[in-house]
Length: 77
Length: 262
Image 1 (spheres, chains in turn brown, cyan):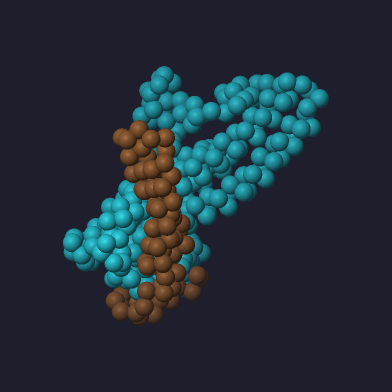
Image 2 (tube, each protein chain N blue to C red):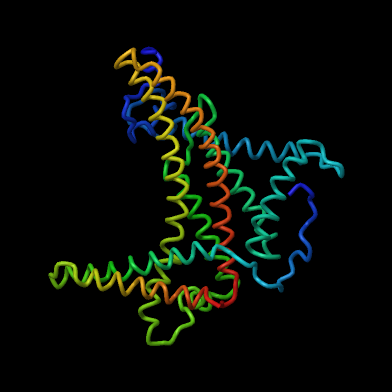
């Protein structure tokens, strides 16, 4: 921190991406986003059809499943 | 004590009203928030940062003076530990912006615990919101410049998955990449500073409220004020942490925009 050597190989475009760039935050966001998006769409369907909340429930479960799937595809090995 | 309590000009259960400070220009105008202490503090933060870096870098020497060493440490910290660490070698290009952002946020936050100032402009959602919008526009712009519009949108919206599941996934991707990011960036900083100020108000004003209600409660009041001081140190931690988190997340979003497909 105090030694002000510039980092080696600066401005080079190659090199592997850094190991952990906010992957945890991304994962949490996917989980919550999945639930909110499909839960929200389910809720809209509920309002449209006039049901008590069955579609919101299905949507939230589906959404969290999709969130997990997205995490596996995007962040998994 | 009673006099002091009226000087603070606040009722005991502190409310959102306590964040709307009296107007300075025009002096004492009702319901006029164009120029208040908050405005002054924002400009003071800007001026302090400009003056600080101008003065410390005016005559840079090979063997740095103390001031120059400090300024270089701040810049070096953001460049090496945030920009390059998160973005990779190209992070050096973003180090100036990230350093400015980091300094601005930490200065603004720091007003929250400076005695006699004790309110941070960041406890109003407007300031974090604008900062988040700047970061948001920047990482999208950087992504589009790097990949071109179509490829960038494709990269950020279409996950590697079979085609029949994509319609289900794309709304989630859009929501989490383009809606949640700026929102959470702004709200995280705002809520921390808001809650911090509120906490200090509760403990300070609570002390006054108790001692006014019954003189026998004086020891509890004093305990409450001691806790205020302790909480101020806790607040210092939050201040540094939130400035760091804001900068790191901005860097992380830029990295995501620059990265090729995972």
